[in-house]
Length: 253
Image (cartoon, rainbow, N blue to C red; front, top):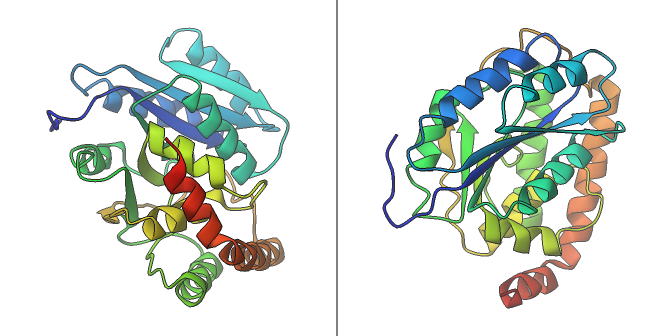
């Protein structure tokens, strides 16, 4: 993999997981194989099992018994956003130079990681962007609605604000989480907006995305619409205090 000489290399991959017994072993093993190619890097992966009702937790524990780079955290089911925030905070306890988030549903390609990693010297917050998104039609509609609201509320054009494929400098993620509203439904959207308004070049690098072959989407139809409405409401509330949040962010050492 390409390496930026000026950038340090310790990396923590974070991955929320819920009812992914059909693919979780393969996903974890592929990512562990990919990150093993990073030269001179201290690398760990943290998977937060969000109260899975299938054998996801047992599979993860079995892999972790033989893979010292894998750390498995089990929690009661709280939803994707809660699991992701737990994963971010667990990662920061290990003080990595970089934190990378990817989901566990096997829709993203590990080999695209180098596209972000090789440019880490250019920004503290780098996002992928699903070049062609393979999701159900109603989820694509919701994404378009959120894109529009981000434009209207924040004046921020983010093509894929909630993409679960992003590389963030550890020290910068710590600052962002310090000003993030508590218990937001979709924390990645807020983190992306904060970083953009703080002047970061998010790059939005095109990455591959494929159909889900196993498991089920946890939020569908009416629940997805309710989630979207909640997210829009939270964004409006967040906008009211954005100036204060940015000031606090820039005051952080």
